[in-house]
Length: 399
Image (cartoon, rainbow, N blue to C red; front, side, top):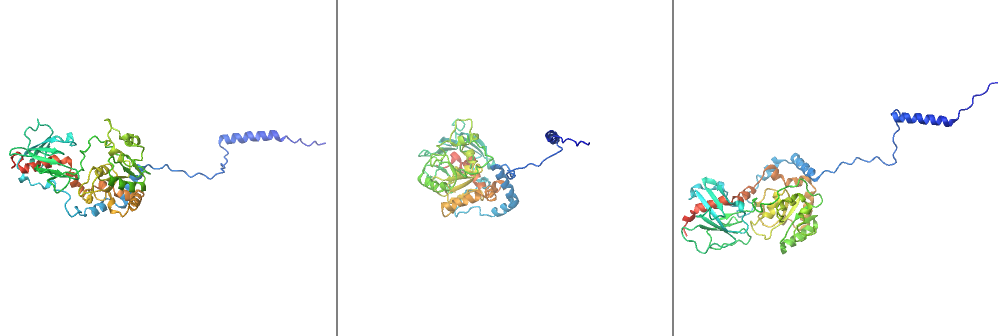
């Protein structure tokens, strides 16, 4: 009798197969595709920083527009766009034969803001040397005495120093007692623009390598003047902005810039202007509104913004375009309404090529009238005043 074989129990068999499969998976000989109940996520690229975006826009501008086109367009522009000359002739046009003295000393007698580090001995054009000092020891027999915001003595006698008055305020006025009058206007004896670097020497000149993405406009005003506040009050609500001054402040109080930008701090006890340049550099645009709207009165409010690498939105002098590099500012007076201006600012901010175009003057070295504006600044005033004194003969000038 043949006995049929007994069926083996399935449980031990399942155990053996499971162990074998586990060993194969462990060694990598068998691989099952993974199963997911959700769609495969799309890889997220890290967001580029503002600096990368701006640097990229400059490179795109180079490729699509470029310096050659920019130079060709703006080198043909009229240097002086207003009917009356906005700037005096520079030293390169000086007639050397008219100089009567080879050395001139200027004694600064009374002043409120003229910086101490302007004191120096300067080599000037035509071999003229110029001593500018506040020391009556170094200039014990000055050829001219300079008064700032103080009237010169009533009478000047023959053999006494020439009297010079400087007034860079918008309501500039001669006293009738000065021999030479210095102001911001080309129609006066000697012109001095606000474009130099000698105003507030302790500034932190750090320039941020990033621009705020969402907050487009910087504004700071500590003198709350009706006309300026009215303009700012109409424009700023239409644009994302930070207002750091006392007027229309929206950052929790004045002097908050260092809270936002600690890198702007300097070692000296902080003053509001020390970090102005640095703080501005974090914004695409700076709102610059003059105290007074008058011809040629273009102040540091505009030039600080340019120096910081931002684009000024400007309200002020009607001939401002004679004082700035080509295509470097947005003149608010050219727009029909604040809404139209705000719309344009948004358009430029959101178009990398259009925004880069406002920085092309610096990238390509196209200065236009700005070259003369810098040449007429406080930085060059010592030589230009000494030249004027020399032409008059200094102490030898008639009374």
